[in-house]
View 1 (cartoon, protein in one colour):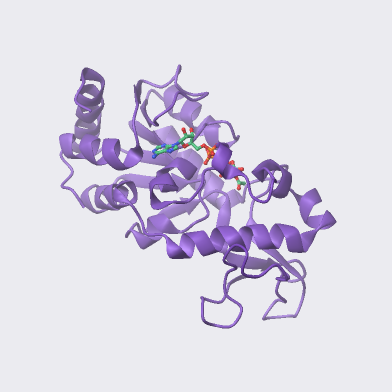
View 2: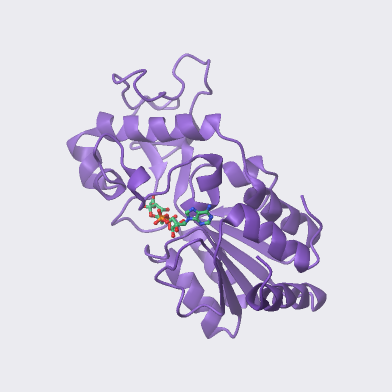
Length: 264
Ligand code: OAD
């Protein structure tokens, strides 16, 4: 992609860095699509005929905890088999290159961290952890080979939520579900980053889920500019400053390189 929009957006990134300003990024499922992780709202987001919205709720978990657990363990299996892609790596390179950068993600897959990002604000939790319903502790799940690793689809359908290693209480996925409030600390960090951002990169999100999508408006209200990277138009496309169409793994490295960030 070599058009005016990309050049203008790259110039804004370059300027923010030259002024020692703040850059923030908000990522969604699309940033992991090129790693083979299905997004939520595409046709590929279906699992055994369920839509994500039917499984990612407290009610679904109350009704059938093992079904919801198995869905997450299936997703976790995909994530553990996947590798970070060029977009994850480009964001890790941006963090290394520019001190004033905050990466906010709606993703729970941990691929940003695996690509080398060290300061990741996770708004929706983390799929590699289970949280105790009794003592509240979130513990990392066993790795594959530790006996109770993730489910490969079709491999096991008998998997139950594990017991808490601390107090033996029941656990649940360490994920924020529809209808639940975001954890306060990450939300405050994300809000502060968006409010002070000279440039907000919005990558691979349908911008349909709030409050995360509202960060776009926080940046715009603060006078910052917003660059969207997505192969398709989204709910946010009309209000962003530049909408760059294309896969994140192509467009983001091109943008950052044009903005002066050395490739990963
Ligand atoms: P969605 O599935 O709603 O949107 C994914 C977006 O990624 C779409 O706009 C796609 O066009 C775009 N996309 C697809 N391939 C891409 C690529 N190669 N490069 C860039 N973009 C691409 O996912 P989210 O917006 O992340 O919440 O969904 C938000 C939240 O809804 C998720 O965090 C999850 C879900 O329910 C929870 O789990 C709490």
